[in-house]
Length: 130
Length: 148
Image (cartoon, rainbow over all chains, first blue to last red; front, top):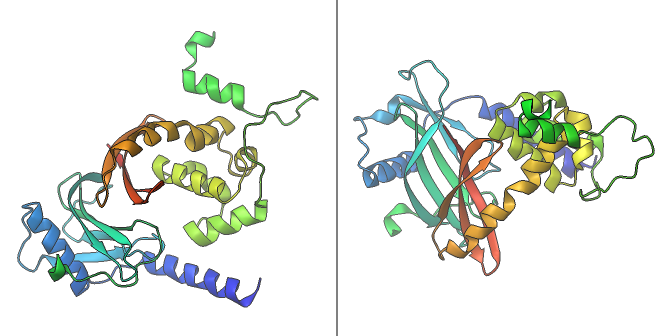
């Protein structure tokens, strides 16, 4: 293996390791979720984001996250529905479709970020522009 | 006796390759393989964190199918995958080939700058998917979720 291959392999290993650990949601993610929840008339508690952790998904760098809160029932969770979506653009002008998904108990489940050419997201255009 | 077997099981049985071809000529509809066994194992480990290739057959079906398709896109052969993962040849073939025409039919419904949402059944599982037109004659499929 050459150096580039090794570095790419290490980056993927680190991404996988990171994927297993939750973190707080960042400002952009909170804004996106609140925007989409509002669009769907989905009620969010005040400071809802303090209860949730974000688990980055292995989506090739597009930025999708799994949403997990401590108060959720301890059971297998699965996708129930996509409640709202919007289309923004990356700086390279490729469309990014962002969806908010809920689980079988109607709790926040995923912020699904799909850059339609499957390349990693560089910087999403600001929500205010739309 | 055959009437007592589910159609899917019969299909798998007929398509299951034998260890020894016994000199029987066989029509092969799979593309020539272009990735080694080691390459498949590396892909599984690096991309999906799967160290034991046999674990693929125990994954949740939509995830398993996604991985099968990805490996075939990377050049894995159907028989090669069946041998390495223990998943039957018939399942691999169906996952990769059978549902595409149903999805292609929906391309005409795709509107520019909007995702078209559809539902397709794979292996008895309902999958929701979206198609987006990137440019003329170039589409991508994403947002794939199993519906329960």
